[in-house]
Length: 369
Image (cartoon, rainbow, N blue to C red; front, top):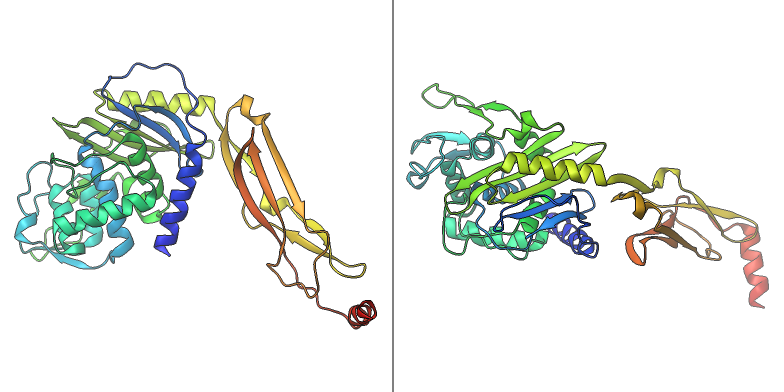
C-alpha cells in the first residue's frame, strides 16, 4: 500500500515536469541558492530557480527521516535512548543514554527542536544503524520521485555525499504532507512530552517562525549549517491551494520564502477542472434501457488566467454496454488537456447494476438464429 502510494506520487511528479514552472516575478536570489515552489496536490512546479542544483540541506533532511518513521514505526513504541544518540553535536534536546521516550515524542523533538539526537535515536530504532537507515532513506526518496538526492545520515550534519535539490526536497515534503500526523506535528507551536522515569517532561517549542509570520503557513522545517547556509521548507495553504516552498542556502530564508509564496498565490489559482460529484453520463445498455455512469475522482489544478482558456476536456463513451452491467464496469474515459499536454485521465464507469431481463434473453436468442 505504501509502495503504491509512493509510486503514484512519483508518477504525478513526472507528469508535473511536463509543465515546468511558469516564471514568476523576477526576484533577487544568491547565485548558489536553490529554490522551488510546488503545488502539493497536483505536483505542478510553479516556480524554480537552480531547482536541480545539488546542495547540502542541513536539518531539512529530517523531513525524510520523519516520513520513514511515520510509515514504518508505531508512534506509541518506547525507545530506550542508546549511548550513540546522547551527545550528538549540533542542535539537540539533550537526550540522556538509558532514558525512555516514545516515538511520538522523539518525532516532535526531531521536527520542532531539530534534535540531532532524536534523529539518531529514531534511525537506530528503525534500522539498527545509521548506515542502514540512510540506505532506506535513499530508497524511499527515489520512490517518491526525488532522484537527484543522496542521504548519508538522518539529521543533516555536514557529510560528504549528503545533498539534495530544492525540487527534490519540495517533492519529498509534498509527499509527507499527505500524512495527517506529519501535518499535525510540523504545524504545532509546542509539544510537551510524557514524563520520563525521573518524573521529568520536556517542552518543545517550534523554531519555525513562518508559522507566526506568514498567513496560511502550516509548517515545515528549518535548517542551518555553515556548509549548507540557511535552508527552509515552508508549507502554506491559501484559497484552497497547498503550496510547498523550498529555499536552500538562502541568507534571508524567511523573507525569501514569503516573496516566492506571495508571487505564486498571486499568479496561480486552484481551479476545479472536473467535479466527479456533479458528473453523470447515460450509456445505452440493452433494449431501450440506459446505464448511469460516472467518475470516481475530481481534478483540481493550479492555472494562470491565460491558461484557463487553453484547457479542453474530451469524453469518450462506449456506444453500448453488454448486459449484465455491474458497478465499476468500464463505460468510457475522460481526458483533460492544457494546450496539447495531457493533465488528467480517468475511467468512466457504471454506477449501477443492470441485469438481463427475460426479454433480453429472447432478443439474444433471436439474433443468434
